[in-house]
Image 1 (cartoon, rainbow, N blue to C red):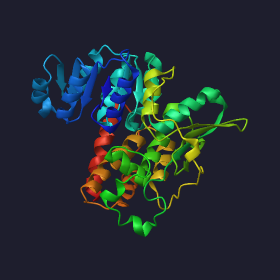
Image 2 (image 1 turned 90 degrees about the vertical axis):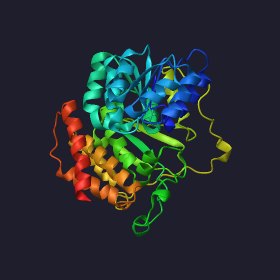
Image 3 (image 1 turned 180 degrees about the vertical axis):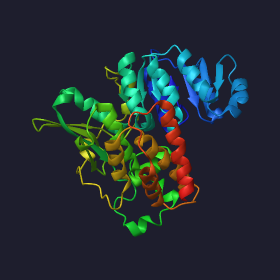
Amino acid sequence: MILGSTGSIGRAALEVVEGLGPGARIVGLTARDNGQLLAEQVRRTGAPLAAIADERGYDALRRACPGTRVMAGPEGLVELVRSADADFVLAAIVGAAGLAATLAAVERGLAVGVANKESLVVAGAILMPLARQRGATIIPVDSEHSAVFQCLSAGRLSEVRKIYLTASGGPFRTWSAAQMAEVTPADALRHPTWSMGPKITIDSATMMNKALEVIEARHLFGLAAEQIDVLVHPQSIVHSMVEYCDGSIIAQMGTPDMKTPIQYAMTYPQRGAAGGAALDWKAVRALEFEPPDPERFPALRLGYEAARLGGSSGAVLNAANERAVDLFRERRIGFLDIARLSERVLSRHRCIAEPTLEQLLESDRWARMEVDACC
């Protein structure tokens, strides 16, 4: 089952499934509003269930997919998850919109490949305990967290001293603050190494993606914020590293291709023979690492702050950033305003230490409105 099959991760996942052969079967697909592509995917895979979050696309999807049970709206996504005969769910819906469906998969005790940061950033304090309670397996698909997950097989979690999340540095790694003040949406969407959706690509440019990954790692691996470091690695070959108490550092490396962590999650605990292209070591001339610049990329500092605060802080930072990115893409604010507005909203939030899901969703709504009010 793929939640968010029309996005960049979802499309890559469908290619991975095709490479796995006849033993892999798609039982459900969902999309936000791209009903035409979703219908094509349903016909190609023979998926018996489909759901579209935008209810306006329901009638067209139903007509285009005779013989397929079609659902619509946020409730339709949850209904699909609860009714599908699946043993693995890929949660790849960008933003907080996929949270309820992801939690529904965890409630069923399924293996869940988490490809959207928001499920853990917003609701990690709820999702991880629920997974333990229901016997669900959470497998990170984000390349950095997949790398840490793989490196952890070399030792026990109690033996981990620190983890290193690598970052490409994005398209503005060497730009001055003055240059970054003039960045346009088109500039921010030109990533030097990865091919991703627009929102994630802009998050990479601000380094907000690393900020959210710090919060995500805290929940996934039960680490303190002080045990999580970020290193800029322009080649994007080392996806992350784990440092153990004896000083040993284990790294996971490979080409910057999301098909590899997607397939690893789908076939875990085995490894499939396909996946992404193998790394050509003859073409690798150097592996460079440098600390990020907190002055030019203040978003990263916000991630550590939210990770230390815990509770509802992750939901607020994520929502504020999502709304600010929307405004930037609409050219209503500047590039540097994304982090500035996110920081202002986070500073105004009264953190709820042990929030309910309803309180997290309300915090999400409040943060978006605050961003608009601050513009």
